[in-house]
Amino acid sequence: MRTNPFFDAWLFIIGSTDDHQKLGAAKFLLVALFLVLVAVSLWIAWTNWREDPGQRSGAHITTCVCRVLIGCMWFQGCLWKLPLPVSGGLQYWTEQMASRAAFEFHRELVTSVYLPYLSMLNPIIFLAEFTFAVSLILGLGVRLIGVLGIIFVLHLWLGIYQPGSPAEWPWQYIFLAIVMFFFALHAAGRSLGLDGWLRRKVPAVRDGKGFIGWFFNIAG
Image (spheres, rainbow, N blue to C red):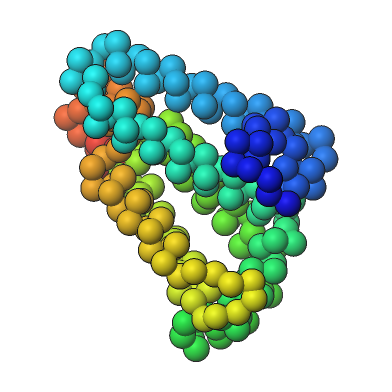
């Protein structure tokens, strides 16, 4: 049960949410991982701030803060995809999609593919959301992740579109898709993120040379 956003944030940080409790001792690993990601993100931001005067602006700070917060949201969201191979939360919402998807072919896809093979899909979905979280918190490959995130979120929008219980407001998915769009459009990883550091420190990335340089030049 939620109390207030400050106390709930504290429970998340110390690993005392309901989603954490379901994981037993493994919750401590996830707490440590989250804290390390945030600490590394702060170090990357400070390094960019210190070395690149062009990033010392309100726009870059705001973009960085928003990016990290949405990354934290994805990290929190991936927790209820655990434990593997099939989490109760994901199974419940996938069953909801079977009757609430916007289109018949989508409902049929859920019934005939998603639910029977959920033990295979659950790890993929968890890894996708975890990847979104790491990318946004660290500011790495944000343009690519922004595009993939849009597709992911729009699938959720269409999958839980019809009214039902518990109620879902379709616009919330549109808002999240728009946020991911702007992260991709404005290459938010270059605002005090690892994408900006790579472009400044690694010539291959800055010039798009070689496969790795080309990939991170396009992705970030």
